[in-house]
Image (cartoon, rainbow, N blue to C red; front, side):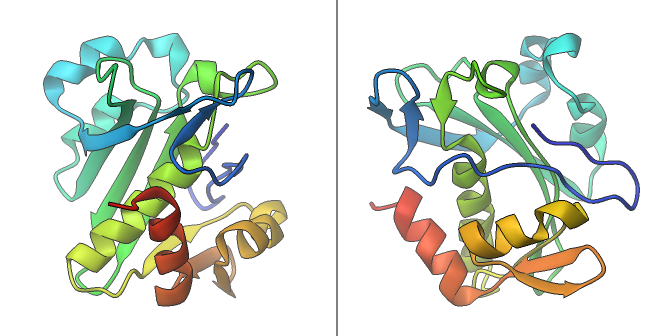
Length: 175
C-alpha cells in the first residue's frame, strides 16, 4: 500500500525482495516485464482499484509512468511507478501495487521491490550511476534503510546510491 500527500512522503512497504514476483500461496515465481504505461492502458485502471490518479500522472509531461506485468500475462497490471529524470538522478514520485497485491490477501510478493529496482536501472541506463531519490513517510525511513539500503538525506528525502542500486538490479534483472 502506498500513500502520498504533498510533503508527506511515500508510504510503500517492501514485502519481500524476490527474483521477480512470487505467488504468496504457492511460492511460484513469475518473470516480469516493465514497460511505459500508455493512454490505452488507462481503461484497465478501475478507479476503485488504485489509490492514485494515474491518468493525471500519465498526462504530466515531466514524469514517466511504467507498469509491471508478468511475461505470461502482460495485460494484468501488477503495479505502477512514476519517475522523473532530474538530469543527474531519477526521482520517484509515486509507486503503487495493484489492489490484489496489497494487504494480507495479496496475490504476489515483490512488486514494490521490482519497481524500485527498475527505477535504479533507468538511472544506470541514463548514466546516473543508479542514483534514485524519493520522499518517505518518517516512520518508514528505517524500513527503507534496512531493506533497500537507502540513505536518509534530510527531512523525508532518501536516496539509493550506486552499491544499493546494483544490489537491487542484480536481484531483479539477472539477464
